[in-house]
Structure formats: C-alpha cells, structure tokens
Image (cartoon, rainbow, N blue to C red; front, side, top):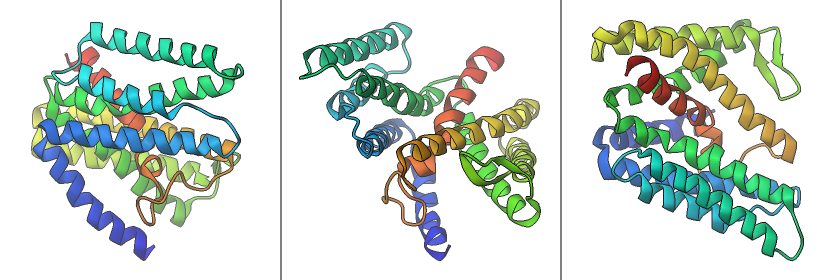
Length: 260
C-alpha cells in the first residue's frame, strides 16, 4: 500500500502538469501512453501464444497522432480505420500461416487502446476542453470511492468470475462519490455546467467501472495479474488507465452530441 501511495503522489503532479500544459505536450504524452498500452496488451496475449503484430499496432498510434495533430477530422479518421484494417488483412494474408485470432487481437488492441486513448486529445480540441478533467475525475474518484466503500461495507459480489473483490456496495459508492466530486468540480470551475457535470459523473462512473471490468476480463483470460510494472504498486499503463479508456470517449461524445 505504501508503494502504491508513493507512486500515486509522484504520478499525480505529472498528470496535472501534462493536462494543464495541453498542446503538444499532451499529444506526445497520449502517443507514448498509447504505445505503452498496446505493447502491454499484446504482451498479455503472447502469454497464451497468440501473436498480434506490434509493428502494426505501434504504427497505428503514430499514424493517428499525425492525422489528428490539428484536431479530429472525420475523413482522416475514416482513412485511419481503412489503413489499419488493410494492413492487418495483408499481414494475415502474407503470414506463414493464416492466424485469424492473432489478427483479430491486433485490430482489437488498436481500436480499444489507441483509438479510445486518443479521445483525450479530441476533447482538448472540442469547444469544452475544461471537461477533460472529468475524464480523470470520473475514473479516479470512482476507483477511490468504490474501493473504500467496498472495504467498509461491501458484501455482495459484483462480478466474481471477473473481479472477485468488487462488490455491488462498492460500485454504488463509486457512483455516488463520483457525482459528489463532479459536482464540486463544476461548482468551482464551470458552475454553468453543473447539471451536465452531474450527469457525466453518474454515467461516467458506470462507464469507468465497465472499463475496469473489461481490462480485468482480458487479464483473467490470458492468466496474468497485472499488465506491466511501469507504475510500482499500480501495475502497467493499462492497469491505471483502464477506466480512462472508456471515460474519455464517453465524455467526448457527450460533448459533441448533447452539449454541442
């Protein structure tokens, strides 16, 4: 626990610096996290003798960074999807033997990790960049409140086959705590958007927990405890950013479809 706390105390200031500075620093940081994340994801599947292509996965991250440097442009995003799919199919076709499962994992890693992660950049290019904070608030507040609620009053298992320690009581506590923190954030930073922030806090917390369970599902499938060791006490990039992979797209699409 001490190592986990120390790691968090070192990581939080770095995260604050990156988000506050924004711009090229944020874009480079997201590219690095996407590369580290897809490397961890593919390594996990190597554990069960699947062979997703790291070359294609990492190339896709650089390509998306290039295509979205000036913001999200739908034509370039569609081109990115085409190029990824084309490269994966050619990779499968030219392989020594047809390995559809490994190719499927390659595609899954690209869209689940790289594409989802880059929604952080998309939010910064939107009309409401300040709502980027809610990506991290919904993820980290949910995790914190769910943990302590579960420790003190948790009894009913939520998804025992995927994550045995998570409880329904902890899940509810995570949602309520997230709404409180989101409301405080709105009151201080964007009071005119209080209702939107509360809605994002409520549904974002649920989405964050789904992201956490999804990452746990993959870990259980491949038989590992953590995706990596880059963050002492927390595991790898995916162990810490699993919820954010879901909350970032949720916040972005809420902005462009609801708030506009």
